[in-house]
Length: 119
Image (cartoon, rainbow, N blue to C red):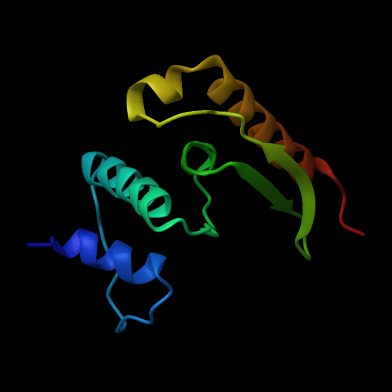
């Protein structure tokens, strides 16, 4: 039997329109479970996922590539390749020096976009 979280994630990942829902509040454990479920669905279904987020750790953990947008109007600031290989794990992946390097590069691009004067 599927849980509500699995159903929500599956519907969104598969691109189906789901009925409008109120804001889904999740704690950190549930968020980690949802992130890992998304990776599992992506791998098992062989699909590409476009994720829009403001969470830098989430963007690096879930992605092979992070496109950093910034400014007004939004412009592409940087593209950060995430060369993490193999299965990802919440603890070991986020402690990996490659993860930390990618996270730092994404944060740097965000900070640089905030200091550039608007045109």
